[in-house]
Image 1 (cartoon, rainbow, N blue to C red):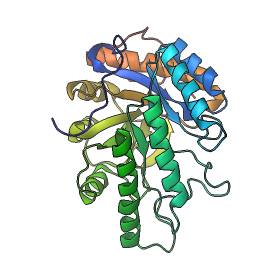
Image 2 (cartoon, rainbow, N blue to C red):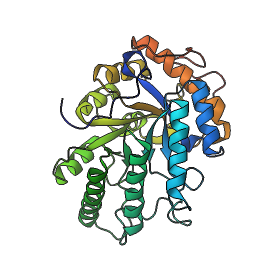
Image 3 (cartoon, one colour):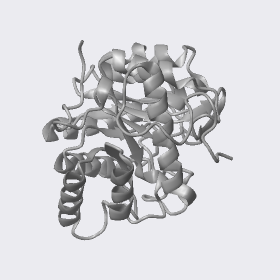
Length: 315
């Protein structure tokens, strides 16, 4: 196989079948980061998808180096792997969600943020740093937006190459690059960088990709460096708890295991912070059940939901 791969995880932290389940800290927005990490480790998660934000490792607050070092120590003490996510909603602009993006007239603040994320990822030993294109602003033509995206991504790729960090670019519904075909176009436009991989959100595959979800996994297996997992319905970009959407998860986990993927498979439920510990617990139980049914193993008790029906207590 060719293309980027995450570094092998610490010895003893790989679930049978090579799958390691993590959880996104954007689903713990009401928790202190230290507390969120402790809860997830206690539940049995193997890693976290850490969204840099004002409440979780703010890249613009004082003493960044000291705070990054403290988080690195905390992750190591808890035995948690990490990927860095950059989807904070209002970190860069308190008035406009996700602004500015690489597509805006002045993308400098976004580029600075992404380069900071790369440096933080390097210092944390992150398996990948994940980012996306953004929505094309009004008044910006598709051609101009594509040129801006390629130019901005090239700067981030250069920073990642210098830092020795793997990038995972995420196709996001409604954004300029929203599907696997768009990611392939972007990678080619960048000259096929060795460490420019893909972040694949399993829910997004069900939402808009033409292929069945397991086939999407196989389609990008050679370049898969980061996986987000959630349930979703066709044509509706809404991250749902497992068992409340339309995805059959055992074949998806089987495809991930068969592809040799060794990165984190992190639950992505950014609107569930109000019940984070409960949702995280039943999500992990669901995933272990699905992994067992897929024949790919998984550590920890298979409780808190089934692989084909709604989790207990889901509403």
